Length: 288
Image (tube, rainbow, N blue to C red; front, side):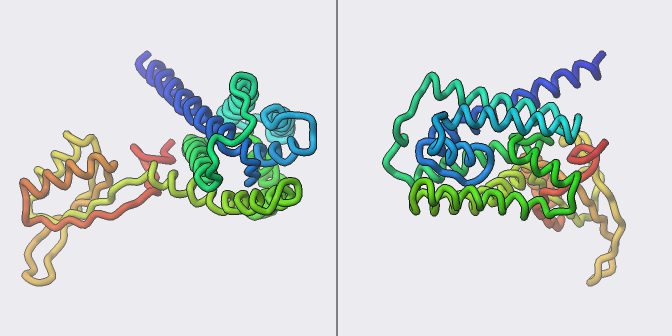
């Protein structure tokens, strides 16, 4: 019963995060991307270009394309399309269509295109990073990538970049050079922001502690921080006296507690702290 409650609580928390992240995505796209005709890739980029040559709004075009791609996802991928991706994709499409009905925008929010470009990049990229970190995606062209990955030997990153670049070039012809160049900057910056956000979300601290009395430190790690550690027996190179090496990994907030505890109780201990965002194992990522 307790395990079931934990699963329900975990599922609720995941979908709460997905919902909030999707709303951030909708705000970034609708307030900053659509009014400025920024077209740096994805379904929303296609919608911006098509809305200029078709009698339809970007939100409605986004909804239509996403539904078509979801259908293809189920046909070619089956359950691999993922319920989280379906949820995000539908919520994004509905959110954009509702925003167009409730808050129609005839012009950009400000007269500073560079400022709006920054928000048009950061908000959707931040959302995308959370999606990817939770095993989901925003749907759209990500579904195309999943289909290509399954049925071809193409480099998916390169294929998607070429598609996105094609959208940017189309924006140059449909709108103007300034819009096209801004879209190109957005395309180049988007992946950097996503990578940076994912790395910061998963950032952990790797401790290598060399000391004479390891037990108090190990007790603090296991009892106070709820982590584990590996102990190695070593010998000092200068005096050849016995030393103990403790290796442990903590979250960022726990790292401060551990560092302060060691400095207070064993000021002579040697501590090396490094950053890592790829920790795979129990208590971290990728453990089944």
